[in-house]
Length: 370
Image (cartoon, rainbow, N blue to C red; front, side, top):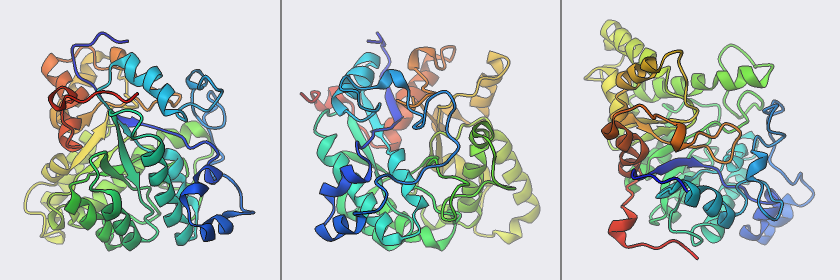
């Protein structure tokens, strides 16, 4: 266990459903179980996978004692991750569920999103009081997604809405029912790469074309976040939904200063095109968008990272995350070690506590699950 005096909230941990679609069938109606019979048992995946971590991009050393894939056992994840690192809360986001954007059938996507949510509520949230869930919705049908948010989004253990993106920019009115429901319940929208980008007609496209290697694809993920933040901003989503918050997880943050500067420069020249933006665009982004630390970009000199953190106002915008159990996990004992204590406290704990409305376990007198 890490002997840390600093409280830690891990904002991006990935659980796994054994059996994939077959493992979700108990959480579907009989009619939908029948519909999935005879179909492939797993959600489609991108053909370009990490060369060092096998087909699932999950670390081999996270394999459960029973031989299960890393992230598939809530009891082992508690022991292997939460207890070892003394984590106060872990926000669960199922990238496995994110692959439902590869499906062209909206009904199937909606049913799968609901089944994923019910599975994690049933199998995970009672195991340990430190688990919190970013519930999944299917953007294929935004009205059904809004119903799903209102169905379970009021639970204390639900702290965000994981929105796997279809190939429609987020400023489009298509998403408005989702934003309305999320804002109503005080839940941030959780964005994350799904592993389907550039591989399916329904999933998000990369700028300029389709990458041909994993390293190229992984390096270009910031394109997706940048394009969608620009869309949210200039389409006036943050004006229409003034309480809406966005978390861009696992897209990095080294590119954010350039984005903010370019937004402000163009707004000064073309502000008549977006008259609803009454102040500099960067201020809307800093007020409404947050970023996770993983994968932590490592500049040539330590002071460069410090400067970037200052540029992005990290004391407000950056949340610590590990990405457990994926191949590129970042650990708290090796992350942001040279930052001032007050800045580290904001990044490792306070920013997440505020975004997800998490109360201290000590204040609650809570105990961990058995």
